[in-house]
Image (cartoon, rainbow, N blue to C red; front, side, top):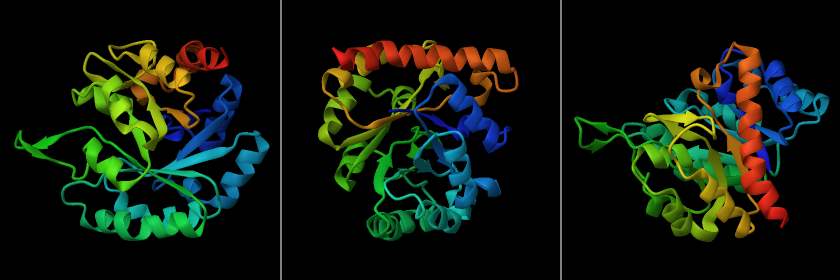
Length: 250
């Protein structure tokens, strides 16, 4: 199932986000719970989901400083049993989040019947050699349980997508779809250097049953230029359908 990420629309309200997802033909959405109070309101999220007939299939946290919304995250996601929690590896000095990820998140998922996935993040360094995130290797993610692979983060980190998918194997439960254009991650699917055609085709041939989340950087989505934005979303969805949906049906 192809989902659309709310993180790609930071300057739109959630109602407009749901409307775009419905109009373009996405099958569901992922909500990034942040300091926008609407993302922390389960009643409002359920209202939008039902109004637009658009299931909320997964939740995530902001890529930086997630500590400030952990309590809100817990209170919100527990109202959506069956949803995926795609949680990135902790930052080097993110001790609170690291402890929460290890001790609280698994209990939260078990108690409320949620699916916890560990997600890789872009590899960035301090002083050019100290990794800014811990537990971010594919080995660490795989060892922790189910995995959500962010393909653009793999690409900007110099990791081969096809090899990474093979390495994770049966632990792969969710995929973030986007491309890398001129070194910049989260580009539209049809604009960039990653072998997404091969990756999607391989996953389809392997009968991958997990979800995909389309996540495009707002600038590359042309946020605010609505006609162009619709074109970008439509082209990316078409790309997915050609290389995954149609292949999976064969």
